Length: 138
Image (tube, rainbow, N blue to C red; front, side, top):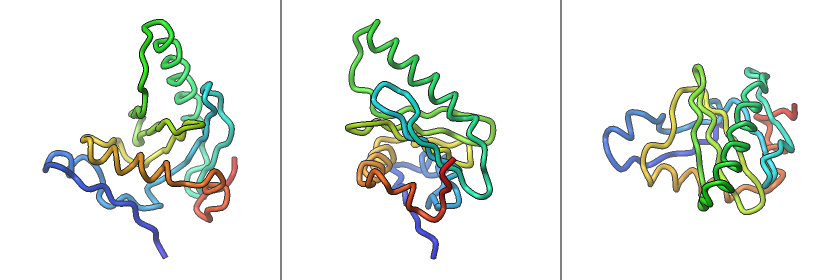
């Protein structure tokens, strides 16, 4: 059985730039980071075992931390990092960051899509990825 996460689009352009629905097969990897931006756990899939993208997310979270303290910015919730053939979507949760590697150069392009993705990630139990059969601990 294939689980599906759907992203309702608020306009035609947003619908064209994000796969709808996003399936488990589109998720290539997950990385969990603590609130300081340090990696805690990585999960890969049988079809995509690379974790090289985690270093890029780590660097982006470090840059975010530097900019936040230097410019006194608050309110970071989500970033998208476009990579070759994939996108890392990083979401802030209460006690950590979750980075999802998606198999296409996509990112939520409207508030509704971002909110759906954020709500889904926030609803997940801390052990969700470790127990999900689609993912393998790296």
